[in-house]
Length: 338
Image (tube, rainbow, N blue to C red; front, side):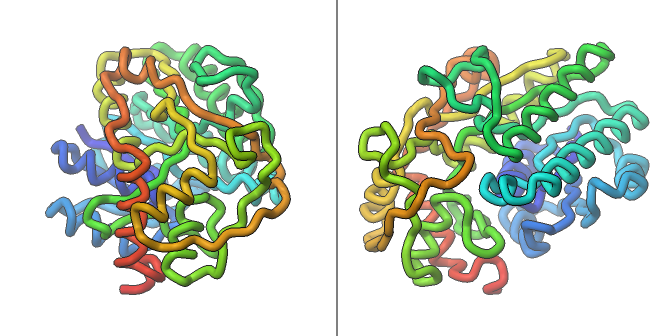
């Protein structure tokens, strides 16, 4: 198939592109490079041995996006592009709503205009808000507690309405839990701008000496050790979930909502311990105030992913820590290093 990947130079998008190319798909990447680097494309091509068509444009530019569709045959779209930092979304809600919503509306309008109706959307477990029980099932009610999560939830609702309005649409909403890790080659990984918002790159930057210590946001949650518990999933496992969703979407499933997680939760302190064991590096950390918008616990029930898509996570927390450290060691300053 010919697949358009928005945000394809980003963390999850780049790993998914590798898996798509390795499976024989043709990939077209659209990325505005706001949280990525052109070097990612070079490394994707080095790893796969194949060229990837790339357009460094913004989805907010509808005319430029339409040219991409006009100049390429596209069977399906995997939509990763969007702002994603919970803390920043609380401080800058309008930035998140305007970017994430308008870019998705533009994409869907251009898809319709070009008769492309297969869409896989990169959603988030944040749409579940603060569930009363665990593990989290797709049937749970949704309620986001921060603008980032609300932007994902609003987009989900837009896509549901779109699916109901026209039977041509085949849409899959993939609700990710917490992606970590890197490609086994160490050539691509998570390279956030500035101080990381996510736990694992924060840990690895402390380990490599780029940051002095890790801030642990709260140790008074009702969890095993007081620190927040999350379902961490290896980014390569996550990428492979998109291939399974792509296979399923070809069967003309009108609308599917699927969790992608391991089904197991780890606290921040447990992840620190696992990383120290995997890397041999000591991680300095300090406890600071809770972060606005965070919840105490979140982990998935991945049953539907296995039953519907034939997918389940294969890599464990040790793989996640080892591969994260391998990436950071090889790229202490991220993609700018080389």
